[in-house]
Length: 631
Image (cartoon, rainbow, N blue to C red; front, side, top):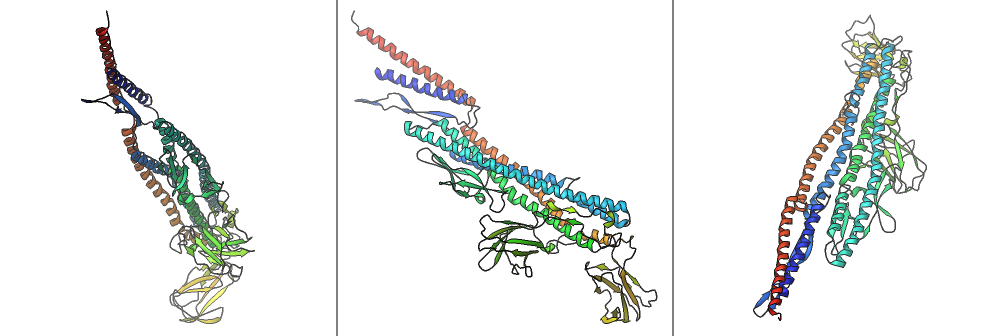
């Protein structure tokens, strides 16, 4: 009879524990990261008798979390990927809005400048047209600088975000380590899983996965080791490493990510970090923002080079040669923090067509210099020795080295990054716009042949004899002299280059026919150089003569637009994948009130039945006492 009573009490206590668990589930139905719990039962050891075994009731073996590690890992992976894409897409959308605006976009602003040039070509002596041109030129310069300033602002925002991410990751890692200690102690003391502590730790790991891609390895003592990147340990047992920002060795304003090691040193792990908002920010900075700034700078370089070269070949309203029209920023050279030499550099852009959108790493070797292109990590052949008389040359750059560089010294070269920030119009007098050509050509009225001469163009604006009068006289139908000297073979349409200009004579000149090239005196109404300026902006001056400024502009804006749409589509798809994994986790671990209500009713009835069992046992015991009591 004592076993009967004890069995009832065991059921009463077990079902009370189950009801407690259910009430805990219901109370936490809205708690983020809570995993529903379930009370597990086991039979007590039965009592042996001669005629068989008699059971002794039930015990609670444990209260277990309903949790699937595989699904949890999938949630973290999808969360990390989605967070990375969302961060990337957010920055891309802002960048796309900056460049693609129909009113202030780069293509629109550049076209306004071209239109103003065309208006000057239509009315070369018009001061108002020239004033409009200078106004549009200043507007173009301001727009380019504003683009660069905004891109620089994005860069600063990312640097600030990296600092914030480092602090947040370190805080989460510390919280996970502390929970590891508590969980390990709980397992050691009670040999039972501390479910609520496990939920708290998983919630921190889930949150960590939104910042960076993580992997976890459970340990036998209940702790979890957390790894990031390519296996760098962030949390090991009760110890957490700090994520910190490191100063870029080339650029003090640029951050890299580091992980503090024992002893206080930090290892640079930037290149191995992926996923999460941190990975998305780094990816945007390195793969989009920096290339976009370089591409914008190269457009500025080409614009300045093309316009200045053609403008110098013209003549202004006062008859003076055209001067520089635009100015730009210089090539940037940044020293590595560990350099021991004192070398300085003078780097000039010598070939616009060979200039790339990449940065370069220059290193002093035991035998000379090596140059590596950052965009494709390829070694670039260098010629020259680096002196003023024999500079190092590569990819459109001329590099003159001064002072001493020691072996191993490294330098970061940014050919175009700073060009846009220094882009400005250097003339303010509309009369200084060189719309006219400095030379004119004519055929003598007494010529008897059918030869004609082109208007001519300047090919060397600084030639000292550019404006000197020159007479081309035909000795016979197939030979001509220049200023009475020489006997040059004549081919119809073949360029004649002399004194920095070029003309073509076509047709069939007769012996004694003369053609003159002279200074364009009083050429206020001449528009030849203005037309040449318009044409130069559509000429193939980039990518070794295969792309124009307009091509480069369209490519920059187009690539940003395409990348934006691609990352938006990928983000939206990943959001669906992430939500599906969250739903799968909730289906396993989430609290279902209908299910809990049914379980509550079931265990309530079981509790009442156990109580009734005790009541029956008590009644039987009382009856036995009454039957055996003395009267």
